Image (tube, rainbow, N blue to C red; front, side, top):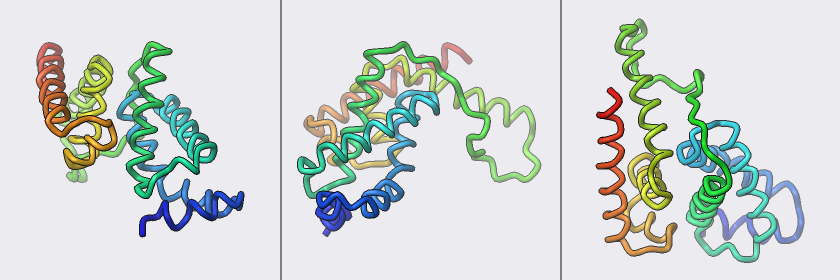
Length: 177
């Protein structure tokens, strides 16, 4: 039994507590994906809020795999946002450091931060499908089958979109280094 199967019936009865638990369990995942697709924390927070509003409004449409539904809706909300607005890329200073060295080399830290900024900026330049495939497959670590189900395409299409997106992203980063 999935989390969705266990909690969604309680949400349908308009009990706020199960919905709050559901939001708490999945908000980091939704926010993380939205941030990676949109590039700005404020926009990602707005998108995450919209995702959970849609969950509340369309709770009767959610299938047995709540997580896949949330990924799909998050990607769709972010794609809608891209169609409506031009994205301004802004990296958050509070982002976790990947370097485990307690006294990191300043040049190395700057180079890593610049590379992260370029990758995030490059992601915003990709077409929606390629961006979604890379974020879900490469960054979120979902399987090709899971990404295909979320995006509603064949696995071969996900592999093609991810490959094409990786090449474009690498070219973008190399051209700015």
